[in-house]
Length: 256
Length: 265
Image (cartoon, rainbow over all chains, first blue to last red; front, side, top):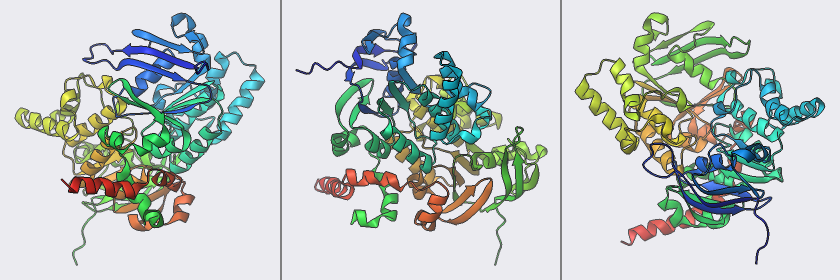
């Protein structure tokens, strides 16, 4: 029997947005263990981001429960949960609000009451990793979409969360920065949950795939099994092979 | 030989943001009617800044732009904004009405389209973007991918001559990506696509304009661009690390199987 304790434990989690005809989450059961790297995939509107918002208490379970590191996510425990979980939002505009990029990255660290030396070191490290050192003095709202995204990721990384959730981390990044981020994700030892439609990036970063459709997890298996399950991929609109034409033009030998 | 006048002409365009960031450093570019252009370059190379000059959201410090023969100056802006439809990178910037239907109707109403034609245009645009079921929903309750499609519907309903898409497929699931790629590929308008998703651009655009540090670095055919690894790498656009995935899903073999399966019926 597997006695390993789950770092994230969702039990029968359901949630409906006000005025919605359908539940956004519909009885989710799932365990995620320390150091796992989990991809959440599914069509637009499947409930992926809604689920992520429950993992750090932005949304609270209407029925069922969310337990993080054996702590039930409820208003009294939110502070603890948010120290554990770092969520990079899909839209960086939802996350960035400080006068400068440096202050954006410092914000979480100041809330964690870290000493100023440590804050300085972490900002430098994070800026270095995300290649945003040259942007530190700029207002975030003057940056390009891809630069904002890198700042949003840098701000979360600086907090060194135990659980890192990234919602569409590669959207709007140029391929160079996508590659940097892919390598970075692979080098992080924390527990990682990545929501994305970018299957090539997920394929390189995640071992496990949760497939969500209509607010439910309909499949929980390895990334390779997911990639092999063509029927499932076709049925739920996740077939991205039309994009492979381009790879074919570059690497004809792989397609012979 | 008859020399066609370009639908977009940009001459020596310079622009500096108020914080001192020099974003455009002398851009020269002409685009002919009906062309489908991929505008590519690193994050922060000036792509979004450039296209915001085409309909006068930004006005250059120096240089000239004409759209369909009209200089982009204050008195022409209303006409030019009827000619150019722009789908922003962030759909939040574009959706603000009580319902998706109202958002899609907003543009044509401003263009004084009559009520019957308006309804038809809205229906057509919603249908094309697969949003009929969501017409009465508040846009802010949609998922990001749905918002992205709604933002595009708001442009389609205006039937512009030039359509500009800033990262049209980001945050979309593969099915929606495929649908939107096909829609964009078949639009009878001049199109400019900004994207880092080269496989999508490969299917839609014939010509590539590469921007680097506020300048045009290269203009070439898509085929030449995609096989020029040195240029791709120099501009941070080498996405071939993602092609590993093609090995992982044993692409052709399965494709053939599926095709055979469907042929046998």
